[in-house]
Image 1: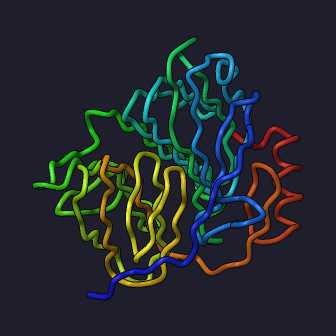
Image 2 (image 1 turned 90 degrees about the horizontal axis):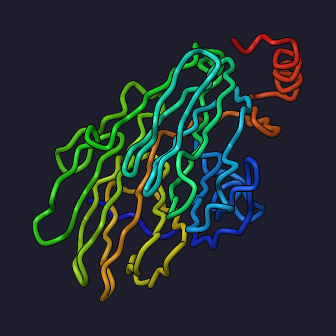
Length: 277
C-alpha cells in the first residue's frame, strides 16, 4: 500500500458569492486555480443571518456539476427544469448542470448557524451538453458508520470502509466522505490510485505526512492508494474527496465551464436566448 503524501497545504481566502454570502474559498483562487477535476471549493458559514439571508438567487450553470453538503442549516433548491429540494443539516445535493440549468439556493432560516461546502466538479467534453440532473440526498439517506475507536464516518459519494455513498452514476467516479475523529487516534483511508484527492479540515487539528494541519486548511495529496491521518488532542473533522482527473483544456467564465472560449461565448448566447430549458 503506497501512502499519499502532501502535495500542497492551502490557506483559503475570504470572499463572498451569490447575494453576498460570506465564505472561505480554497479551490478557485490565485494560489490554486483548479485541481482537476475540481474547479472550486467553498466553505460558507455564519451565525449571523444578515450574512446569508439573501442566499444564492437564480443563476445559470453549464458544463460541470455543483455539489452542496450542508453541515448546519436549511437551504431550498429550485431550478428551471422542475427540481426542488430542501437541504437540511447533514444533507447533500449533486446537480449535473450539463447543457444548462438555472437554479437558486435560498436559506429557509433567518438566524442561527448556517454552514456547508460547495464543490464544483468538471465534466469531460463528451458529457458537457448532457441532460441536466439533480440528486437530492436527505440526511437520513447518507450512510453512516462508527469506525471502532476512530470516530464517525459519513459517505456522500463513492465507497469507503465497506460503505457505498448515496450519490450515484457520476462520470468522474468520486469519493466524498466526512470523517469526525476522536482525539489522538489514527486512521488509514483508502483512496483509489490515480485519482486526484484532497482533504479539507474544518474542525480540530490533524497530523499527516509529518505535518501538523490547522483548522480550515486544504491539503492536496500526491498519488497513492491510501492516506494516513492522526487526530489532534481535541479530535478532528474533515472531508476527504477524490475523483478521476479529466485531463482536458478548461475554458471558464463565471458560471460556465467548457473546453474552448468559443463554447463559452455560445453558452452566453444560449442563456440570453432562453435556451437553458
